[in-house]
Amino acid sequence: MQEKLVLAYSGGLDTSVAIPWLKEKGYDVTAVVLDVGQHGKDLDFIKEKALLVGAEKSILLDTKAEFAQDYVVPVIQGNLQYEGEYPLVSALSRPLIIKKLVEIAHEIGATTIAHGSTGHGNDQVRFEAAIHAFDPELKIEAPIRDFQWSREEEIAYAEAHNVPIPVGEESPYSIDENIWGRAIEAGILENPWHEAPEEAYTLTQSIENAPDEPEFTTLTFEAGVPVAVDGEMMPLPAIINHVNDIAGKHGIGRIDHIENRLVGIKSREIYEAPAAKVMMTAHKDLEDLTLEKDVAHFKPFVEQQLANLVYDAKWVSPLFDALQSFVKQTQQVVNGDVKMKLFKGNAIAVARQSATNSLYDEDLATYTASSSFDQASAVGFIKLWTLGNTVFEQVNHVHSETGMSNG
Ligand code: ARG
Image (cartoon, rainbow, N blue to C red):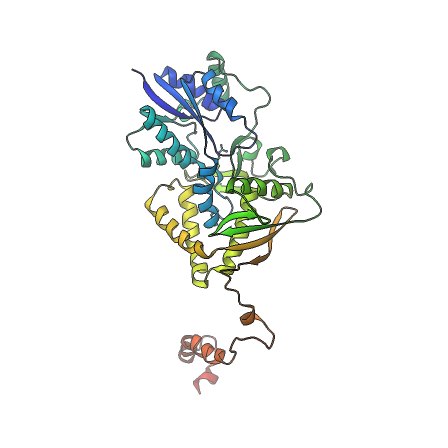
């Protein structure tokens, strides 16, 4: 009997030639297409294409809601941006893809999982780290990494095995997409001294062509998660799509990042993540209003560590779970509304309120005479606050004049 294999199938040339190649190796191939909110892709067609090029079975799963709830939410609540720039678009989908593939492998009794990553990127590590975590017994095939084929060799193999080669329409870039954004690499982008051509972008307008009038939109958060736009409650995937549309129109969310890959290579990456930019700016602003100072000052350390873990293939790890518990705890008070101004590539928080959790007390903060803040109590506070420095200066005279303080 043939061994069963489950392949993460995207419909592109790489994973399509992988199918006859894996069959020649003796596997019975089940292709799995995951809908994580890829923009403008005909996933039913892709599902059929897998059968056309030789898969025994092809499965299409709609995982948009699960992806948004279990993978995007931690990024919003944690303000996660790798190296302060990248909202982890592709890194996020990998553990979910593997979770689903492992479930299917168990259902159909497959021994092996295959993915289409190359040998010089992060995704191979993310896929395989997740496989090892979910089921260390499963075997792994990585045909694209094994081939090391030139484009010509790949096309020759495709022709010999009746794999359709997309003519003309194939993008000069390597693209990965989901509801949270779009990652574009390769081609001319590999020259970091070359501005990314306009054609690389599909979700965002150029700043030049963005409207000359700003647009305002209000996001409502419950426990750090967006639940409504301009007062209308919507499921999270719908909110993300809606904000992607309006923010993209205003040229928001283009990212041009010289990135440190986990495999040690520096790479030039272009991303489009309009909703991510707007939502995370709004979320951070609401945290400024609702988080107590010590929590607000400590959380960024956790955030940076979490962003690195997600990027570096440690989504499934005990440290991730522990830090995630910290973030969840902090989010209980992050409730309220943030009004965002969208204009010419900028997403600016211009107003915020929280009926239940605002720590901002106008009565304490005001400069007017009506303030309830006791100014007299500041005098003694400042003496004690600076006592250590005062004693140090009296002894060492690093900044003070010897004559004055020696007296
Ligand atoms: N460099 C990004 C990451 O590692 C994006 C990779 C996306 N893959 C692609 N084929 N464009 O998360």
